[in-house]
Amino acid sequence: MPRFHCPVDLAPGAEIDLPPGAARHVQVLRLQPGDGITLFHGGAEGPGGEFEATVLRMGRSDVRVQVGTHHAVEREAPRAIHLLAGITANERMDWLIEKATELGVASITPLMAERSVLKLKGERADKKLAHWQAVAVAACEQCGRNRVPVVHDAVDLAGWVRAHSAAPGGSAEALHLLLSLRDGTRPLQEVALGDTPVWFLSGPEGGLSAAEEALAVQHGFAPTTLGSRVLRAETAPLAALAALTLV
Image 1 (cartoon, one colour):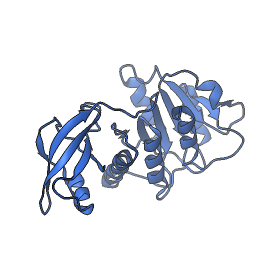
Image 2 (tube, rainbow, N blue to C red):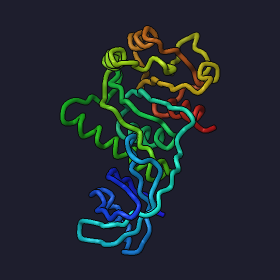
Image 3 (cartoon, rainbow, N blue to C red):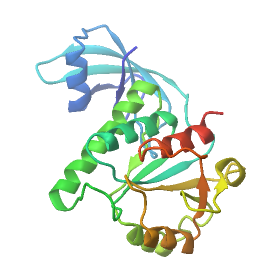
């Protein structure tokens, strides 16, 4: 049954107009009145789970449905993994966000690292953020997740450190890991034991600079390795996510 992100008030028996994005998708699929679909709110403040729904009317640009039975099902990872990922070039960042969402990432913060090829600011940054959030939504519709991971505003590492140091509680209770090729790193299997939340810091093509790694270590990130092979910037964080979430 087709699944659609619907971040509006959902309650069994209610008749609602689908948001524009979901309505367009229903029309592309050429669904008809009487066809069944699945709706999920996706937000942290939403009802969770998913709802059965039935198409009532297909308009030129709008779709009206009746919400049916609620199913309190979640398909989240067993521990919260937050990814602080260096922005990669071209479509690789889209691919990273899509696959990280499928693997169960709790949130993604695009990192404007010193070696990031793509530089974002102003209107261009806003458009890219909206695009990446839409990529995460589409991945949830495909993979069955009912909680959409937040894609935060792009930030440099110093800015992230300042924000999290100033925030009440910050991320102090989480495990902070830095994917690194430096000597003396410990294997992921040794440092990521338990079920505490994890912040993963991973660089763009070319990795983080020496200054960025030093700043991360200074603020509690423990260098870790995935093994002897050198993985691409978009592959390494996904391998780490898979190791921790596919249990």
